[in-house]
Length: 410
Image 1 (cartoon, helix red, strand yellow):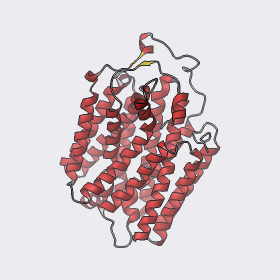
Image 2 (cartoon, helix red, strand yellow):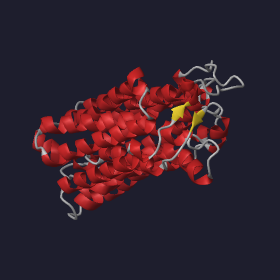
Image 3 (cartoon, one colour):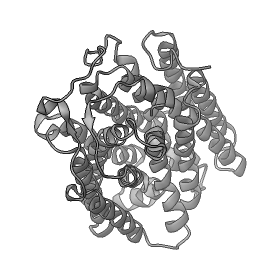
Image 4 (tube, rainbow, N blue to C red):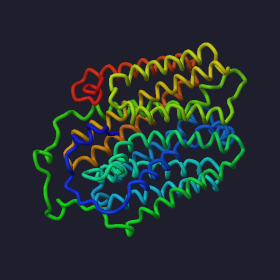
């Protein structure tokens, strides 16, 4: 999310930091994100069981985004703001664990929808809270904690990659039944919640709330930098990865051939894994972001137009997905980093929440629209149209002053 340069540019929050390691918070971030994408390679099986088409599948994928937006809205309330940040992450972990249990043991479409909503609530509460929790501990801390503050943005993408990869390698190969994978996720999240429990160490308390030192050097003033470019960038970034997360099984299919769970899971994990690399390693290369996204989708369009359902088509699709995912990771990293850098200390949590809210709206609305069009318009036409829209968004963000991509590196 934030690069090393951006972290040093962020003003101090005036918070007193004690205790807890950021590692359990990072695990909660990865775990809740992974739970969101575990069903990706399993959607063909769910579609048969629930008797739904491509539109229904994309809606099921996007349902958790609705929960995430609600979770982020809860974090913004005054009552929730009084909770220790660590306590919010514990709640997020427990919501994710409950979602995993529902998905594991309760059959039927209504239960699946409930599980997805609970999963989204956990993701929404964890997203902004984990950013605050980890970056607050980077102020004047050792290299270990500053490392976690640097890689936290990529952890979200890494978690999204872990979900389909785990489903592919464990469920797809028969090593674990589907319910057992959900139980593993629930166990990891519950363990992390126990490690983060508020009794383990004293909560992080804003000194300002008790009349303590206030931010100086103008840090408390609200930024005049327009926030909509960062929100638009986050929305576009998650629209890219969400498209692959929801539609990979359909886009890989060709003729009578249906890709295996392992094939779909591995390919679906690639854009998220590449996004994690883009968010952490390539985040300074902001001007590369949308050219990478467009190039990736052009390759995807070529694969669906020329050699769908073949080994060559799958390979071309996978390369395109990885390239587009790397670009999306850069966009998200720059958007969130810019939002945090330009926010006053007392507004940084709200800035993170706003950015993630727009990201999850991008995960839901454009993806559902694309999934709906696939039922009536040829795949290649839909992908080309989506690519043109993304190219337009990228052009606006690169040219617009105040955008995270505008001043982003080479």
